[in-house]
Amino acid sequence: MAVAPDFAEFYSATYPRLLTQLYAFVGDRAEAQDLVQEAFTRAFARWSTVSTFEDPVGWVRRVAWNLAISRWRRARRMLHFRRDLIADDVRGPDGLSLDLLRALGQLTQVNRQAAVLHYLAGFSVREIADFVDAPEGTIKARLHRARTTLSQLLSLDEAANAERTTSG
Image 1 (cartoon, one colour):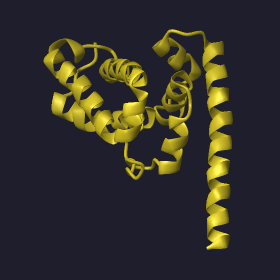
Image 2 (cartoon, rainbow, N blue to C red):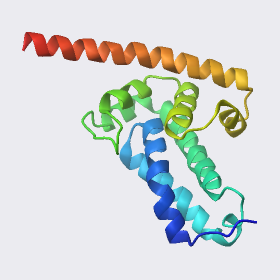
Image 3 (cartoon, rainbow, N blue to C red):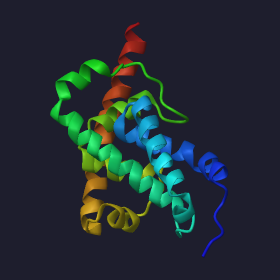
């Protein structure tokens, strides 16, 4: 059994990365902060147990992602209201461009989840498959679709930016 770090140290060390992952998934910084805070709140309430887990950050990540997916499902039912509430000019946290966030937002939920877990969280295909309880082949297909779509979307953004620069 691993020695658990103090909760404050655990929080400080893991919060920024989890926030970035959830922000990339949900596309709204405030919502991502709420999700991650809620997951850490639940971990704190059970810290004597969670701290003994082999991977406490995995537990917090799972809770945050489950909360995000639940909210995403609810929001999807009310999509026309949600579009009016999301500001287009929100800056992303460390290293995430607005173009990338917008492109991620156009992926399906399952493809976006796979891309965020693989490229931002550093999960292997096998780890993602275990996390979402899907076959590895399914995850590979989701990652392929995500890469293809992101490549197209980001190429379009680059072309539009280049056109604006030369015509302006």
